[in-house]
Image (cartoon, rainbow, N blue to C red; front, side, top):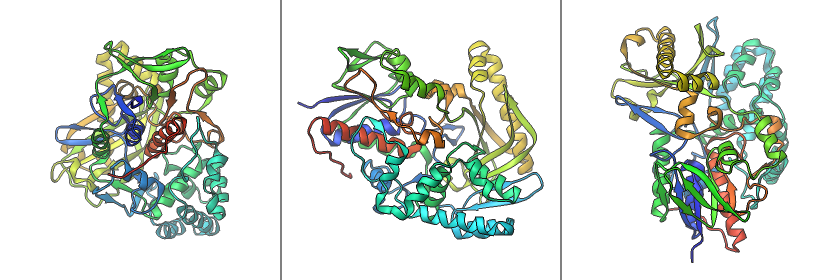
Length: 503
């Protein structure tokens, strides 16, 4: 008789676990609060435009034996998918008109950095050499042993033991934040611009930046045409084709437990879904403190949720315009003539994503664009709860100010805008339940990289957690890997040989 698994959440992690569970003979049901798959890996349409909420690049896009590529192929996500490798990652401008073009090719990037700061030649040469060295590493560690914790930093590094000459670079950059990294460069503009590549998040581990630039250099971080929702759909189809069941519009009220074991979930509509194993790919805080009512935790778990830094909340402003912006960089980071404020947060710069390269996102001759602003979680959620009219007015104001700012970059833009859509931290909570509106779980800082995050909870058997709240740094790879890992663990517990196969 097949053992049963119920998975909470149909995002990347939940669908990954679901696919591997079916490959290994577990009867599997996924319950999802929304009416579509993807979770944070999603997109939405407005007046003929598609606005993407997730994928900017996909680690594992390049065909070959790379671990991440193999995983995507097992999920049926990349077969036949058109990918775009950009020549330019982004262009960063300062208030004086200086520009730094972040080329994806490391040799071109070196020439650009030398153009800007020839006196930093030694630091630039070392920086580029390290990007190339890191590019030689696989996009993920070799298959790890099943376990109930996310490996700590040194355990993860040990997974690359076959790449010993590169291991020191892994450790060096993992322990260094971007603030320290940019101090290598004496030229103030170059130092500032490199920090802006990841949105000015100076606490972020520089390994994330170097790993991304390394994968771009080797053409293993392309953009999948169609964006996030079109990327997730084949994985949903793969799961269903393997015999899995998805229940949409099915938010979970609580996880059912008894005698120290998880035995299923109670949905908010009163439906009970029983299972031998419960896997939560949902928000970590909601899982532990709401669905399980805080009954299965200890001081270490409380410490994680009270001290670890989260990715910040954001406001995403999306626009559809009757302008063909072909030839423009895919991403432009520039100063604002007039800062944009909401609540306690103010943005004096904008990173604008220009989707002219994806013709599926807009009618012919038109372009979809998006930008992220800082999101004051308390401000937006309180406003929505207390004064819905004022909340909508504030969204409209923010959208209007963003359009004005873009109009200065592209004159005539304002008159040609057809649609403006604003998603706030309250939107993220409504559709994904993500804690404090964070868009990507735990921020990958050097301190967090040294920590082991539990994937099981004390005193509770037959229960596992997967996704971005057990794997710092978030992103699609953590969903794929943790979803695969949990089924390896189940197979080990049941004395089964783990199977992974491509469609």
